[in-house]
Image (cartoon, one colour):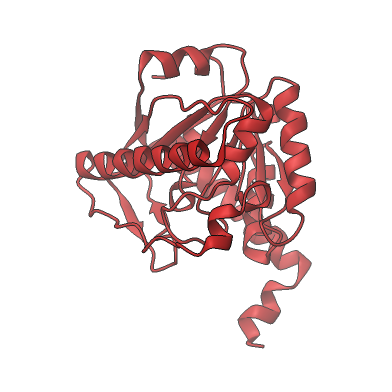
Length: 260
């Protein structure tokens, strides 16, 4: 084990890194000139009281802080139980947001139940459908299964920033720098009625994936950033059938005020 990994296991170092992450998120949120665009039907859900699931790619996670500018006590994020995921979780906690630990490999069932409870209470939650480890920009079926079980719509959202850097990670994580301009684009709601068959579930999964990729490409183009290509699709049968435990990070209950 390298000295860097050993250092990262120290509790004090993790706390310091989490605090730094929280300060960074706050700085980016406050110094970037953000703009949001959405269809009227999506705006009605965002400004109303009905629960819904927001879906965004893992690589655009940082800018989702701006999608929920207020009411941090109602913001819930499901984070991987891996060390890097927990650092993000602690960073969000420093901003006043609560988190739920779990992933497709560990804690997935518990996290799914907690997400269902939040939706039943009327909250909005969010999922990174390509998380926690990809393939990049390819939606897993977990978000569709969650929406079908809870009887709530899915709202796709993505974004880009003029001052940003794409990291060489599996998700091409978008690191946003302060003092630029940012754009958040929301798609149209996707509904998955209870009792929907497997073929319709697959159609909804593809529709979500296509909307998210279209929104991401449009946001990058308008912010003058390079296009990020999705990874090759995973066509393994067992992956297509995975449902409830396939979800990545979750976020919830946005500010009900009208978006800018």
